[in-house]
Length: 222
Length: 404
Image (cartoon, rainbow over all chains, first blue to last red; front, side, top):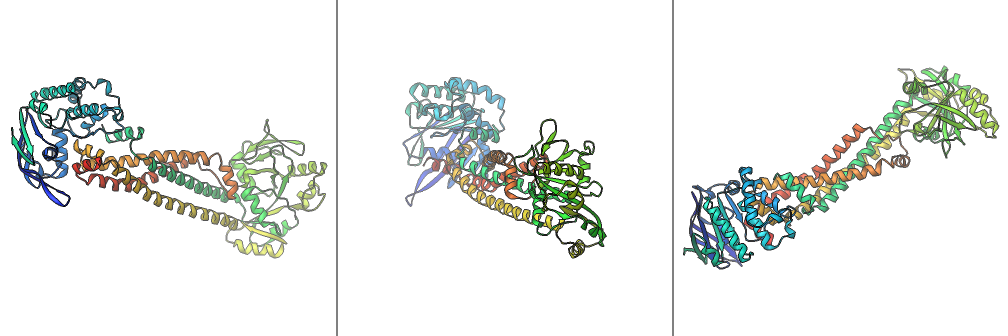
């Protein structure tokens, strides 16, 4: 079981001219493995992550998640599939204001039918591991960028979804916290989770099982 | 977390951008609740008036017609005298079923009141207007020679009232009607005689004629005659006969009631128009406000979508949030309307000059529910429009736009 893309092409319009963000991209995110995509800003990494998660529809090509071609399904089915299978850490801050860190984390379960009890069990572990115990009652406005990122990671891991897609998960973290996050990802992969990381941090990529590089929309295995 | 939990948490922490929508909901529910209360109070007052009028025709001294309306509607004290000899003339007319004389006496120095009040004297032998509803309400309490007071008359300790230095026992207080009858004191002719005698001893004159005694007033002069028309006879026709044979003015109950209902209709039409206009205007403004605040929260919708929130979930969320804001605003609006309406209902009643009766608790609860429903409805269409806007855009586009 895995997330597989075949011949993905995605084009954007920029100042009237079209450019190719993804050019015939094939990739596989396997269960139990950490897959990393490296590349410079604007190379198309984030676009690929969003296509694999079903959030951007490509011009051509197919994405299958556990054997299901997701772009043959409607938007609602793709949303539901994401809720059931994929935890996402976006690049930017994504916590909901007015909800505490804890409420932001458990928000993930509002959209899936996953077993809440098992989710709560792993949550305590994740929160402690990421050093968030003291921050559970704190609102996003009082959290630093790094703290928000860690809460966002905890949210994506909550509910024990099958896949984790993380866009620059260590972007705002110091070295210690970056290492912690990668350790956590490793332990999650060992439990069978398929993890995709988009990063420009070579140290993070070095800790992955499979590393791709992306340049001008083209993906190649390192 | 359920949608309503998220909504309540965000509203509690002031993170919905909904302050303006909340304010307009307060305004709408205030208008609806105060408007429906006003309309109900007037309708109830008119119903009470109709139930208490009793007679079909009042025959009053020429020129006193509008003063008679003043007694009934607002309890404005008057005094007038009419020769009692016309009682038999009226009784003998075709179509007349019953006739009873009535005396209106303005008290200048009652212990209860800083302003003169209306004392209404009835003849127990012929009365068919006052006694029935006094009996209905006070049958077990009424004592001959005592006073019966309207609901707005304050009485002294020990259930007494003092007129012209004499203390009278108050045997009963009538239920509130919202009409001028609430500001009146009801007494039999025997008590009227005593009152006049006491007044005369203190140098106070009663009636149009000077120096009339109590006997004069009850036996030779009264203030008006109340007439009941036989079934099958035209009230207009009987009124015509009275006008032919009696040198007095005529007030018909139906015209008095019509005057009131016309006044109420005017006010109720105004209230209805006001509610419809305010509802339409606030729905429009609320739609703009909801669309504006939904557009300002694009990134939030993107995050929900990223986590797997479907378009239906987003629409439900936005509708729940819009309606919750409106309902909360509705509750506050009703609270303020009640705060304004109940303590000042007597003042409002005086200003309007029509029978006015604040409805009972069940009816008030009904109006609270109606006000909340109307206020919540004002958020439905705006909530649906805003939900469509937020749910119809792709997640990644929302995320990017939200960051700009």
